[in-house]
Structure formats: structure tokens, C-alpha cells
Length: 126
Image 1 (spheres, rainbow, N blue to C red):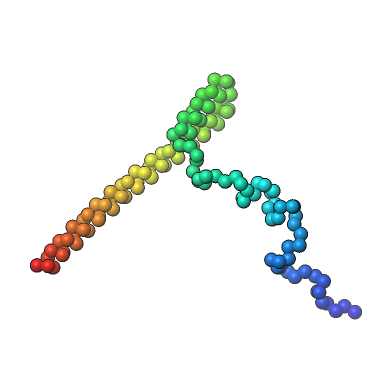
Image 2: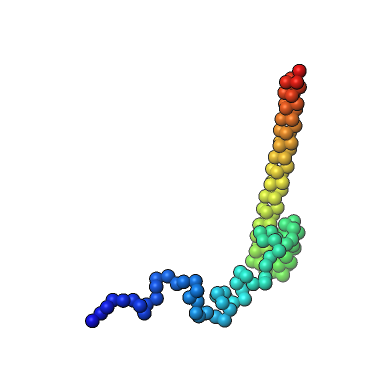
């Protein structure tokens, strides 16, 4: 006779406390020491540690050196890196110009608002 009870089966979802085994000796890190929580961290993620202009110069020099050694493919690779950083430099310059223009506009608007407020105060005080 079958009693259809699933007492011996595990439930559909694991409970958080039900971690009786570990795949490798370091807990939940599947890749060992190369996980996200390892000691290697970039100082400024999203930014390069060097200046874009310096990187352009560096890759142009490397491309020249590779071309002098006869390696056209490596030279082209370095030139592509140089072009990438030149685009970054151009975008940084554009954002600086845009931000400086916005700050000038904001300061001009503040001056206009302040003078209008003073004019209205003068007319109301009379």
C-alpha cells in the first residue's frame, strides 16, 4: 500500500540553514581566490590609473616600436588602443566644456534672479 507521503523528499526550496555541504573548501566562492571578494580591487573602478593623454602617447610609441620591428598587426593593435583613448580624451574635454557652460549659465541666472528680487523689494518697500 502506498501512502503518498513525501517525508523523505526534500522540499522544493532549500532553507538558508540547510547548507550541510560545501562544493570546494572555501565556502560559496566557485572560482577560488579569483572571486569578487578577493584582495585584488581597483582603486578607482571606471577610471584608468593613468592620464588618457599619457596612454595615447604610450600606445603611439608602442605602435612605432612594433612597426620598426616589422610587426604590422601588433602596430595596428596599439594604434587602435591609442584611438580609443583619444576618443575618451575628446569626450572628457566635451564634458568639461559642457559643465563649464552650464555653471556660467547658472551663475548668470542667479545674478538675474537676485537683481530682480532686489528690484521687487525696493518697489514694495516704497
